[in-house]
Length: 353
Image 1 (cartoon, one colour):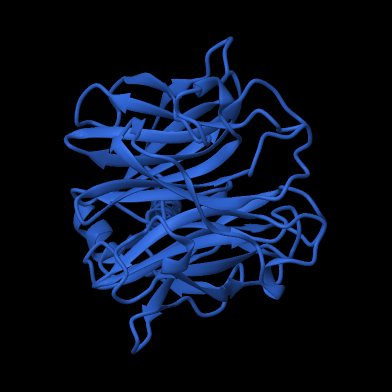
Image 2 (cartoon, one colour):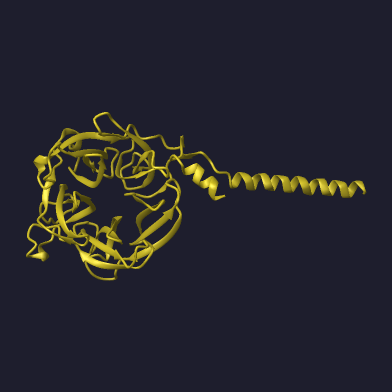
């Protein structure tokens, strides 16, 4: 064999080896990840049957991601678009995906127009099957006012979270005391019983107001993004406070007092905070367990810079529980730092190769 052919073969083998190495690096399964995991705001995760469903709004509609991994988006499907007319034709915010009685429900906020964002109300969608990627029926606006006999008297509401506690379904959300002509209006946390996943049962009750030093002092006192967290016999509501467009955004916590069973009373709740705050503001969280169920994780959004505005990104980190049964979220992790992936995620991805 001539030296020219040998040289050519050697060159081809070298190129193939380099390409193979680059391909291996591209397909490398890492044991760590870095925050932020992606752009976005108001993250909602729910885990079911070993899949993570991430529900979010985009281009005036609602999208769902289905993934085996908490740190990675998966298959995406746009499941709903706002109608061209009606109360919910604009400003689709903070959707949450829940599973009740064999069907999926998406709770979201929307309005006729904005800014100013004075028309926001809570709506609900219902899936046709037990598949979250199935079609959804719009079940309409949920009543969040003070007189259910006059449904036209509905009052501003966003960030609705729905949960079951002792066989009763409840909704908790951020709302106004009364309808206003400006969105520079204080926000409070309201709670009400539900007849079923798409109908309210009773009157709303204000369970929390921004009245602590750590949740007031800015241009607008607000509480929003309430998310229920249940551990053993403890029921918590983790919520956001201070101005969402500033670095002062942070998390507070309500806990149902020991021995209390009446959720519909502000006296049944004790407040603590801030329970989570960071240099660029953190807020509007949700929670999920690791793939092997041994860890608890908080998913939240943070501002991209110290400049006022709503440019945000999604972060996640594990958290622990204190001896008294309270969540301990620690400090927000620094963007760009390598973090160990949720327990069982690396192994699951390796097994999928």
